Image 1 (cartoon, rainbow, N blue to C red):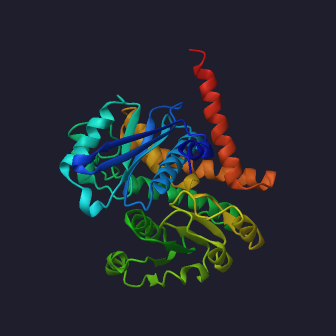
Image 2: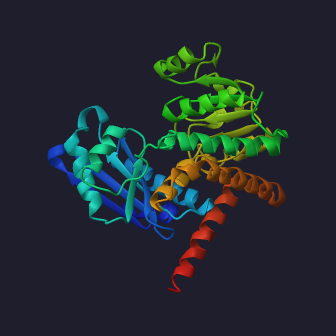
Length: 354
C-alpha cells in the first residue's frame, strides 16, 4: 500500500521516518493530531514482518491515542513511535540515546511514553538525552507506572458496564475472563482479585501464568483456545489487537466484551454476531486510557496524587457512551469516534480565534 493511502485510513497528519544504520535504529513516527496538545506518542519496539505492517501499526496507535484524549477531554494529542527490529538484537544504551536526540528536534511537539517491547531502563537511556518523556517517574504511593493507571482505569470502565448491563454496583462475585496476562493483564488480575471477582486466565506463554499462579493458588486457568467458550460476565482481551475472528466471536459465552487492547474485533462484520448473542461490546480504547489521564497530569505539572480521583472520569465517560448506545441504537464505537472527532474539531475552531 502507498504511504498516503495508509494515512488516509485515519486521516493522519504526519508520518516521519528516522534511521541510524550504525546502531540499527529504524523509527517510524506517526502524528495523528496535536490540536488538543503535544502528541502523546507511545513507543513500541517490534520485529515487524514488513514496512507496511509497521506503518499501519504506527498510524493506528497514534489514532487511538487521539481518540482517548478527546473522549476524556485531556490536553494531549495523539502520536506513536514504532521501532522496527528484534528487541533481543537491537537494544543498547546508544540505540535509545540516539532516539532521545531525535526526539529533541521536535522541541516538545512529541512526548514519548512507554509501549510494548520497551522497558523502564530503556526509557531512562532516552531520558539521558531528552526531557520529552512522560510516565517514567514513580511517586511514593506507586502510581507512577502507566500500566497501573491503565488497569485502574479499566476497573472503573468495567464497573460502568456491569452497572448498566448486569445491574451490579461492583465487580464482586462477577466472573471475569482475562485473555493475556502480561504486564497490564497481570496488574488487572491483581485488581480484580481485590474487587472480589471470580477470575479465569489464559496466555500463550506459561511463564506469565506461573507468576500469577504462584501468588494465587486457586485461580482458574484454561488453554488459550478454550477461553472464548468459558462462561463469564465479562471477557477482557489483553493480548493483541484484532484477535477475535468469526470463530472466536461465535464461541464467546460472555455478556460484556472489552479489553486492554484498543480493538478487540478483527473486523466490523463481527458486530452482528455480538448483537445476536446480546453481548455488550465496549472498545478497549474507551476504558484503557488511565495512562492518558496520568500523562495529562504530568504534562501540566500537576501532582499524581490527583490521579486516583480523576480515573473515575472513565466510569462516567463509559456510562455515558453506553446510555447513548441504548438510546440511539447504534454501536458504542461509532458514537465514541464521532464524539471524539467532534471535540477535536471544536477545539481546533476555538484555537483559530487566537
